[in-house]
Structure formats: structure tokens, C-alpha cells
Image (cartoon, rainbow, N blue to C red):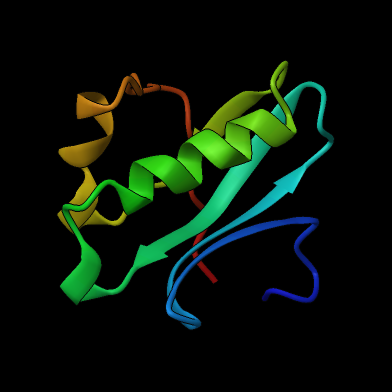
Length: 92
């Protein structure tokens, strides 16, 4: 997963990995933020938002698209994301 991503942002505290944002981007039109994770004990400390902000700084003109885990769906509007009605899924 990480090897084939072209944009990976991490957060480490005292050397320990506590957060990661993995994206695929053309760095111009769209960045697909395919995974964002923060360790449970470090959630609600602003790390997720900081990872998203750092991702946006790498491709400032690209729109940022993500597919939220159901448990996190209420978080994204809080930090400025809007729901998009034309996404489609095709499960394996």
C-alpha cells in the first residue's frame, strides 16, 4: 500500500508512528486521499487535520477527495469537507 502511493505524510511522536496519510495524486487536479489513520490514543489531538493540511500543501491546486470510513464520516464536515453525491463503488 505505501510503496505504490506517490504521496505519504506521517506523524511521529518520539520516533513512534502515530499517524499516516496515504494519497495518489497528479499534484495538479486531484489528490485521492486513500487512507488516513491516527492511533487511537492520539486521536482528537489535531493530528488527522495536520496530516490533511500537510497533504494539501504538497498539491495546493488539486482538489482533495477521500472515501470515509463510516465511523469517521461526521469528522470531515467539521474540518471543511463537503459531501459529494456522485461517487460510485464497485466492490470486488
